Image 1: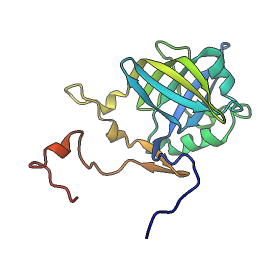
Image 2 (image 1 turned 30 degrees about the horizontal axis):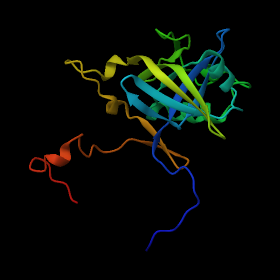
Image 3 (image 1 turned 180 degrees about the vertical axis):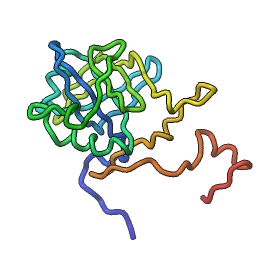
Image 4 (image 1 turned 90 degrees about the vertical axis):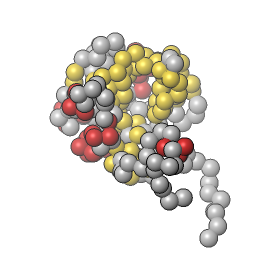
Length: 193
């Protein structure tokens, strides 16, 4: 079989499925699910999220320029999907999914207590790209759940079973296949090529 020329589109999968928390200047908050997110710079640490302007949360994000990326897990799969298909204008997603708000340190947006990692972000630029607007933000604080820390201060996110999204489906991360740099240590690790 050969390759088929497919229509142009976003085929970069899998992606992290994250819960993004936002709030307006009056303190009203909401959660939305985003898969179009990513790391864009390490120094300074920066991320991006892309949001459609018609989303209920968009005005909150645009108004305050602050958000929190809350990483998700297998246990948060149902809530992650729910917060992506239900609108905050119709329902309080925090209550509906029994998610707990905890205060952030640097932004005026609540974090999801049940998330293993909370990334506080402040927008530095908005790019209106078409169907989505990209919010480029500096990471101003990161919080990690202590239950995934070892005695030496190492953090083990994979123990939380992070959630990813691929072509309309959610998946838990799978088997450990190697570490960064393993390919140059072939004498120690044998993998079928």
